[in-house]
Length: 141
Image (tube, rainbow, N blue to C red):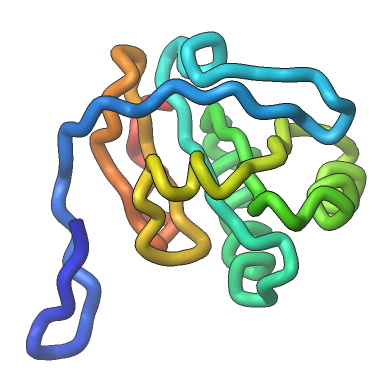
């Protein structure tokens, strides 16, 4: 949960909410579900592939958190972004999974902002959500 402080800064709280399972297709049409992806922890990255702010934050996240710190992550694009998702996947030489999201998944996960970074532990519990990718560096994924 997030709230603005008097200084207008985001304050993040740890949470413990069961992650809802989903089945979404990747850019090749293959379906994946959360249960199979989560294993040792997973970061779900929700983006609007046409949003410049999302793109910039995602690029930082991919380099710093994904590649440099070797975190397990999956990018979920909005339902109208298939071509942008494919472009994103190709841009990074398919080094991570990009899934085609839908309105139901975004609604079930109650996405309050984009980009949204959710950490899900190996018991399929959401323990952290943030718009700030660097807050996930020390998560065990």
